[in-house]
Amino acid sequence: LAISSITSFANSTRKDRSGIMDKVINLDHGDPTMYEQFWRQMGDKTTIIIPGWQSMSYFSDPTSICWFLEPEFAKEVVRLHNVVGNAVTQGRHIVVGTGSSQLILAALYALSSHDSDKPISVVSAVPYYSSYPSMTDYQKSGLYKWGGDAESFDKDEPYIELVTSPNNPDGYIRKSIVNRNQGLLVHDLAYYWPQYTPISSATDYDLTLFTVSKSTGHAGMRIGWALVKDREVAKKMTKFIELNTIGVSKDSQLRAAKVLKTVSDCEEEKSENGVESFFKYSYRMMEQRWKLLREAVDSGDLFSLPKFSSAFCTFLNQESETQPAFAWLKCEGDIEDCESFLRGHKILTRGGKQFGASSKYVRISMLDTNDNFMHLIDRLSTIQTKQQQ
Ligand code: PMP
Image (cartoon, rainbow, N blue to C red):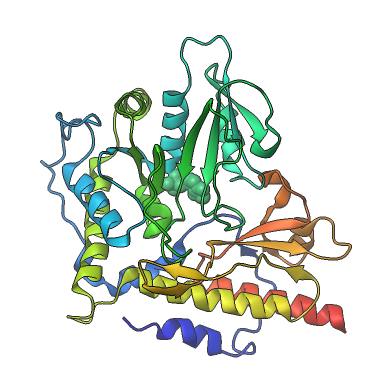
């Protein structure tokens, strides 16, 4: 697969793109539209046809704890983890969810004590994924309750810690930080894929969440999966999904199975028939984008970005860079509200406060279309040039 499109947009002059300085650039959400181009070029390789009589039953696999899990999807999940080497699947129960969002709630339901007269605290270290507090509290559950920053959690009682690694919004690798014996951990590894971070080892946690939204970019399919060590926890998560949506769309699971299969096939066939690896392609896309973003940010003093060191990636078999799905941009100097400042320049981002952090920070999606991304680069460079004049 050619990646000429990446270089052609980077090489187009600012003049080519003039007349768009008034355009509102919305990079608030992490919508992974960047990947569309790759899948377009794959043509019919991921097309599936589902006749009207197929997938009619509620049930998929009565022998599995997760009875609505499509065996073909489960098989491709295991195969992909083996190919990438980012998670141990042996001895794990797979629970499929309508996105990993549903699985976060299923995990909270499964890990909380249903006899307790008090909700269990749910914590995560600042800056945490902005949806965690609202997802936890929007139904005012009696089972669990948002407890804020894991760093300042000091109650001597059970708790659930959500560990996001690499982290949304800042991209750093994380470990649990409360670390007490009453802690129940949920590892949200939505971004533990080679295009974003070096794969250092196969993770081996009790409860791990993944999603196609960030791995292959198929957010609209609404498919996530959990790898669960404990049988009872897997059963309870399945029960939650049964009560919530009586299972997960089979059509989506079959489509996801085909996409994951295509990714693994590309890796195993390698260059034999000229099909390029999805992860190598997306690694190069992210590399290019981060290079352009750092150049734009370094051209003045208004902004700064987190710094990362490279590390050996067991999947790419080389030193590789951390190039997160989001840029955690800081406004330097006396700009106190970075989100408002950028909104004034028609760049929509998500402000630091929503992640429990300072309003000097914003989160910017790095996964949007080439056009929007290049508009961002132009706009940031222009803001800094004007500042210097
Ligand atoms: N966890 C994290 C850390 C995320 O960033 C996201 C998506 N932004 C999700 C979970 C939810 O993803 P989905 O429901 O699309 O699988």
